[in-house]
Each structure stands twice: as C-alpha cells, then as structure tokens.
Image (tube, rainbow, N blue to C red; front, side, top):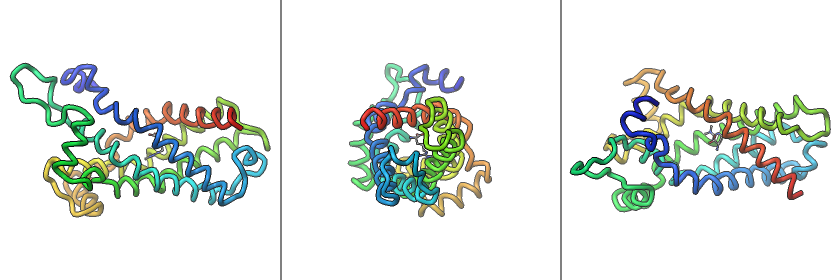
Length: 246
Ligand SMILES: CN(C)C(=N)NCCC[C@H](N)C(=O)O
C-alpha cells in the first residue's frame, strides 16, 4: 500500500475500477440468476420454499458451479481490462514523459481488440472458468451451510447471519480460488509482455519452477480481507431484494 501510494498517489488504488463497477451488476445478476434457476430446475422449489424444504448440498454445489461456469464468460473481458490497467504501474504522467500504454478502459479494450484480435479480449478465460466453476460451488455451499446451522428450522436467517455467512462464503471461495487466480492473471498479462504460455498447465508448471509453490498464494491475504465485506453485502442485498419482490 505504501509503495502504491508513493508511486502513484491515492489514484493508484482505484486503477481499473470503472469497468468492474460497470460490469458487477451484469456479472452478479448472471451468477445469482443462473444459480437460483438451476436450483429451481433441480429441486422444483422456489427461493421462498427453500427454508422449509432445504435443497441438498449436492444440488447447491451443482447450481453454484453452473452459475460460476456461465458467469466466467461475461466476466472475462472486464476482468482482463482490470488486470491490464492494474498492472500498468508507471508513475503519474509528468510533462514530457511518454504516455501510459493504456489511457483508460475503453482505450485498453480497443487496443487489445486491434493488437490481439477479438479472441484477445477473452485471454485467460479458460483459467477464469477453471477458477470460478468449483469455487462458486464452494461459495454457495458455505453460505447455505452457515445459514442453515445458525437459523431455527423453517425460519429465514437474520440479517446478521446473512452478513456473517456471506462474508465467510467469500473468504472460503477466495482461499480456494487464489492459486488459479494467480495463473489467470499471468495468462491475461501474457499478451502484453510477450511471455507466451502454452496453456494453463504450462503456466502452472513454469510459475512453480521459477518461483516456488508460494507463488500460488500471492494476494491471498488481500483477497480474503476484501472478500468478507464485499460478499457480506452481496448476500444481504440478494436476500433483501428477493424478500422485497416475493
Ligand atoms: C473466484 N472466486 C473466489 C469467486 N468468484 N468467489 C465468489 C465471490 C465473488 C464475488 N463477486 C467477489 O468478487 O468476491
């Protein structure tokens, strides 16, 4: 944090934020919509009926994985642009200094499209899918399991329960997702720094060989610290909105 602040000022912490903000509503509605509808198809119970007739953890896991798998393709281009902008660490532009490679998210998207083709916008999408498919299953299982354990039979979980269960669901899923998150980000940067990886496996093996196994846990602390508040609020909004519209 100190380095980022010294090098890039307060603005450095908000680099690449506009695209994730624009995309988060779409990506989360795809995820939660697919999750809910898959669960509906598997168990034939609506969200309201699920407290009285809780679905099995296998069904929750399958529905979570399906949501994770499909949302990855909506997330991929936005996530790529975020990673490219966040990795652009030149100090603030000084008069006379060369301009940064990407001037902003739109410039970043058009440059990738022109230099790497339309498929370039989906660079790292396969690693993203591998990251999100199982970890979204884990995400929803953790949430439902914690809610179920701290709520009397047949009742809706309290707001405090939803916040804590959502927060822990976020941490659990990020702890399991961090190794593939590292690989995904490396593959997304590969188009830029000409370090071609032959695929996900090649990237895993060369990263482990060059930097040791610790490389797979880079960013774990910050990911987990971020995951608690973000996912506590995500689940509270989800439960509140479904309750409001029932
Ligand atoms: C890759 N992983 C761990 C997940 N996608 N986990 C679920 C949390 C998703 C949430 N939008 C977030 O950004 O924390």
